[in-house]
Length: 253
Length: 85
Image 1 (cartoon, each protein chain N blue to C red):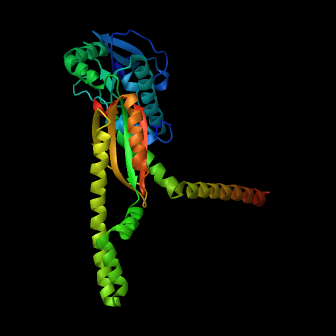
Image 2: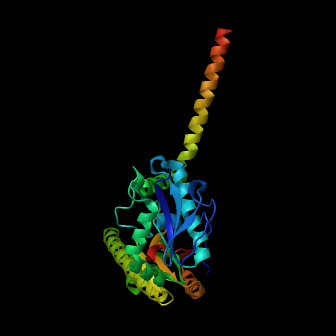
Image 3: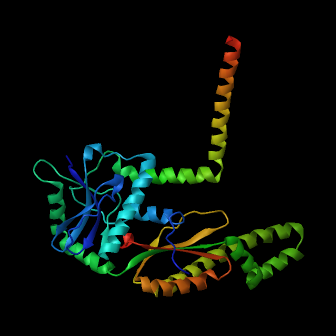
C-alpha cells in the first residue's frame, strides 16, 4: 500500500482534479486540497522507490513536465524541488501530513503565490569573448595603445619588460570592462523585470566566459520588452546572450 | 530576441532549477529515501561526465575499444574452432 506522496507543486485555488497517468513512472497525478490551496501529488510506496542512473534524468524531466502541465491549468503555482516525498506512519496518513503542513504554512504559501502570480521565470546568461574584448581594447584604449607602440620601438630586453607590463594592464582593463558591462546590463535588465536573482557563473568554453547568469521573474508580456533590450546587448561585438524560458518560478519561491 | 524553451538547448537551465531550487519543506514530514538527497549530485555528475566525455571524444574511443575487444574475442573463438576441428 502507498505510504508516501510525491509532491510536485502547490497551486493557487481549490481544484479537485485528476490528471491521469502523467506522473513519474506513469503514476496517476491528482490534487489534495486544503482550503484554497491544491497540492499536486502522486502516490508512492516508499520502500520500493529507488531511482538511479539513467532513470533519474527521465524522472527529473517528468517532474518538470508535470509542473508545466499543472502550471498551464492553474496559472499560479509554487514548484517543489525535485524529489520531495511526504511520508506517513501508523498514526497519520501522508495526505493528512501534507494537509497539516499546508495549514501550518498557509500564510507563507499564499504570500509566495501572490508574489509569482501572473509571472514566469526566465534565465539570462551573458557570455563574452575575452579575446575579442582584448583586441578591441588594444585598438581603442589610449593607455594600451601607447604601451603597445613603446614595445615596438624598444630593444629586446626592454620590450620583454613592457610586454609583461602590457599583459598586466590588459588583464586589469578586461576586469574593469567586465565590471562595467555587468553593471550596465544589470541595470538595463532590472528595469524590465519584477525580480532578479544573480546566480553563480559557470565555466564554459575556453574562448568564452560567462559574464553573468541571472534568473528573472516577470510577466510574459514584459519578456518581449526584455527581448529587445537583450538584442541590443548581443549586438555588441564579443557579447553573446542566451535567453531561456518561460519556466515555472523555481527561483522565486 | 525571444526566449527559447527547446528541450535540448535548455537542459542545463532546467536541471539547475529543479535540482537546486523550488520550494523546500523544512519539516520532519519529508522522507529521506536512502540516497535521495544525493540524487541531484549524482544526476549532475552523470551529466557533466557525459558532456566532458563526448567533448573529448572519450566515448568514441571507448566505443572503438569495445568493438576491438569484441572482434578479438570473435577472432579467438574462430581460432579455437579452427584448432579444435
